Length: 141
Image 1 (cartoon, helix red, strand yellow):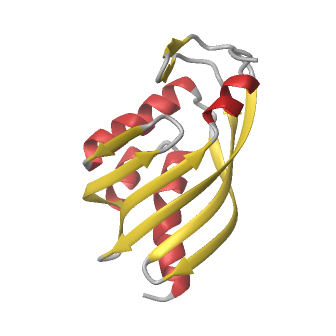
Image 2 (tube, helix red, strand yellow):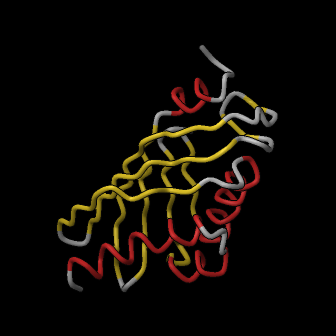
């Protein structure tokens, strides 16, 4: 695959999330997709389980979207820099428990490392600062 094709494959699951299009998300990821969500210390395996996790984020942050800043390709690995933005209006599941909607806006930078094979995203290691997110929501100082 060309470098641009690899970037497009890596962006596809995030674009699907931005549109809250769970069918497109399922199409974009491998059946055995692995999400290593470093900020929450969750390691989720399998397309259906990962989609459920993404739906959990969408329930808490329904207008959340990622804005892409840069992409770097090395072999079949794609690194994306993004900024997540949105409003916290629903229950947010965190390692410390559920946080009721605060109505507060947030903007959190993140780095996503995708492994691509057979034209689909296979693995996503998602690095973001959960403390910064919680500070912006006003639940920690």
